Length: 93
Image (cartoon, rainbow, N blue to C red; front, side, top):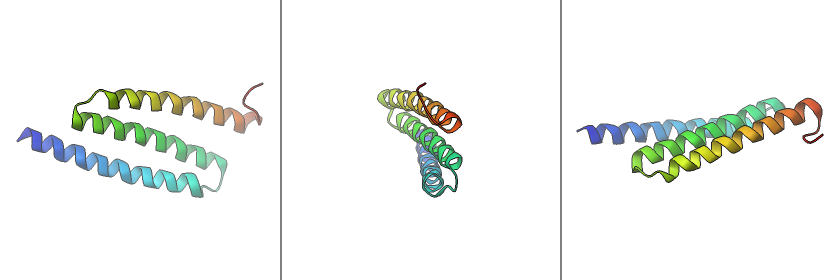
C-alpha cells in the first residue's frame, strides 16, 4: 500500500515540476527585461534539479542526486555571472 502512495506522490510531483519548468521556460524566452529572463533561468535550473531528485526517489539510484548537485552548483555560478554582467557590463575585470 505505501509503495503505491509513494509512486503516486512522486508521479504527481514530477508532473507539477514539469509544468513549473514550462512556465519558467516561457518567462525565460518572453521576458520583457533581462532581469525577468535571469529569474526564469534560475527557476528553470531549480526545477530541473528538483525533477532529478524526484527521479532519484522514484528509482532509488544515487546518480540522479549527484546530477542534481552538479546542476545546483553550475546554476549558482551562472546566476552570479549573469548578475555581475548586468550590474557592471563585464564578468571578468
